[in-house]
Image 1 (spheres, rainbow, N blue to C red):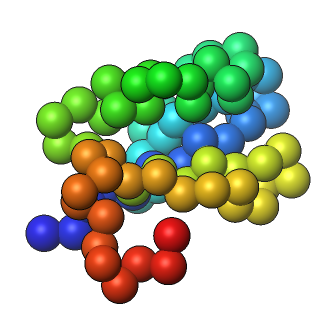
Image 2: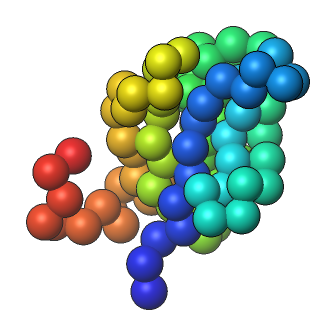
Length: 80
C-alpha cells in the first residue's frame, strides 16, 4: 500500500506554515515558522503510526526536500 502524501507549505490565508494531506487538503498541523514544523520529531509525531511521505516546500512553492516517515518505509527506487 502506498504511503499517504503530505506537504509542508506556507498558507497565505492563515499566515502560517501548514502540514496538509496532499489528496484531501486537510490541515494536520500548523506552526508560525517552518523551522518549528520540521524540527526534531514534529513531523513524525504529527503523522502518527501510519507515517507518510512529506514534501517540504519553499515560499515560492518549489520542493526544498522530501522526507519519509518511518525512514525504513522509503522506497528503494526513490531518488530522495
